[in-house]
Length: 381
Ligand code: SF4
Image 1: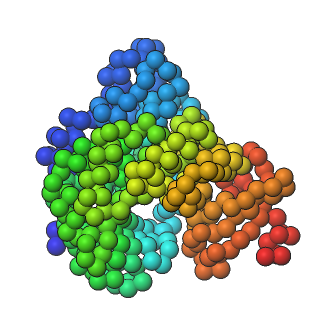
Image 2: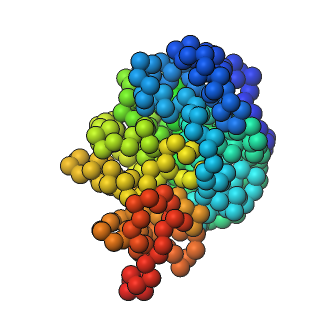
């Protein structure tokens, strides 16, 4: 079997380059002094955006949420967090392959995205001192094939939809040949960054249709952060996926200045529900080097999330607010004047699976590691 290289083929590079810009100088709506300051930021954390996505920005509003998501921010260089907040390296079992929970394996099969989100928790893969993903499809497939407990494979990166369609199709087809792989998930922000990548690619849609209709299912985990990303073109991309048998759900962090507003979050969850792409996870921003301006305290995130899902109908109500912590996915399930209540939704250690526990309430805490476990409650449970 041919090896899959994570660099783009010339054909896809050309197509993507036509749609993407990498240089701040193209942002002619910004004053020159600001551009010079932001250039310092991009020495650490590069800039990349699609022309389409830049077209969604209201340049007359300095606090525009789309602008905030994609245009560098001077505060990114302030000290905060670590390069790998969820300790993904500890769960890396082969080049570009992560295995943390028994049934699910991640393939980091792409090293590119259709834009670079300023809050990204994988900035270590894109920055000046970046780690290169050396994804090896042969090794990755052999790892999955040898483990019958693996029923789910999540294709991620980077964005798998940045791969040339032929390459992505070969990965999907090879996974499909492993009988115990029942769900192939694709994590992608392309429906927001470049929706025509999906709707105009018949080969891609045929692949999804073909390999998602037998013993395995294909799901796309979209990444919309704000209701303004759900443009008519983005909705068409979702419809094209649905028409080819692909189920879609959305996940996004609750990020300061982008969607940390209960009305915005509610509008997002509602619009996604109507688009048959219900919210699945909302994430607490991981304390990652380079994303300090986007952090939201856990208590505030919980309150925002609660306001947003109160009163909305249907599947959006099943969304969970979680921290993707090194030890597992920890759902924030409650709050009172003294405590924050948490439960492991997924955990690496068997003893943690489903474990409920409480921590002392701290309105300035951003992550589990900032909280103090309330041993009285833990013992009682
Ligand atoms: S699409 Fe995902 S991986 Fe890519 S920059 Fe945004 S958050 Fe990071």
